Image (tube, rainbow, N blue to C red; front, side):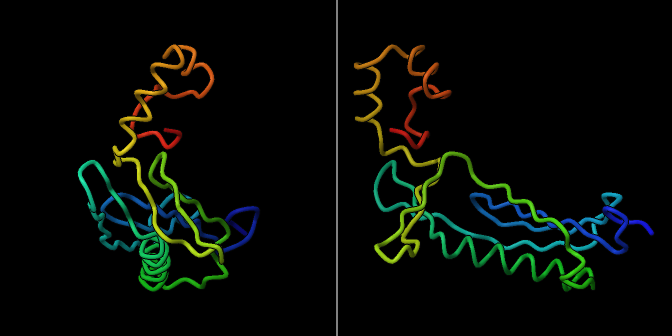
Length: 143
């Protein structure tokens, strides 16, 4: 038999959505790479300390790189039994009233300088860390 749970010809898909690129890979049950795809993505910088990404661009790049990996591998989509995503830390995607994505503020954005100052003047940094699990910092999404 072979494969995951005794199913022949099974593959795992992994997608990494990064700051400057999206990468996808397909692995067989032994961890061998069966196919891969990569596509560059970009950030925009509308103001000092601001960083923005287009979530639709990131989604489309994820799908495109998965298609490239599948085509390179020659496997059937039905042979992919699991999908894993890795993405940028502490990012937020804003949606409109129709639940459509508008923009993403990624972890490199540092616009919350004033908010972090307010946090630091309101609560002890150790207590803040105990509550949130993160230090007060502009790159974390809470501020």
